[in-house]
Length: 133
Image (cartoon, rainbow, N blue to C red; front, side, top):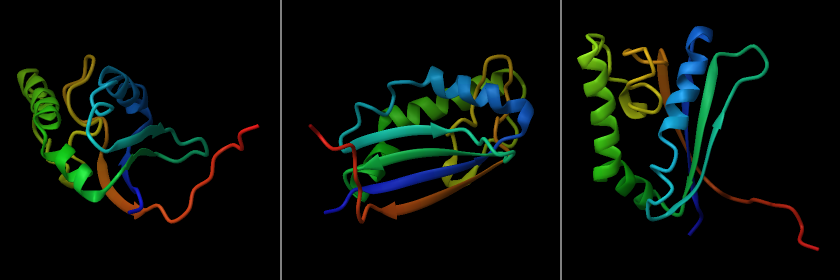
């Protein structure tokens, strides 16, 4: 069975980029222990765009869904929403399928870092890495 890739496309205004990156740095380690997790990368735009890509690779679609339904995933997103609401800026937290990926609480900002979110799904058909010597 081929691995699956989930790419959350986040539209992030320039003034919120550092905030988004800090939020992801603060969540380091949360997904790595999930069963079926294979890879994560946060990709920053370099050619004037405003869309970050949150790349995750999973052993299967079922593993990804289990992660989304897990207590760790739910607790992390609930905590982010609660902290944003406690700062009085919790409106507009519903972001659809990509909810919580950099949208929740921040360091000094209670609202979402991204103004939009879209989830792309792929199966890995072919991949390559460096040749071993």
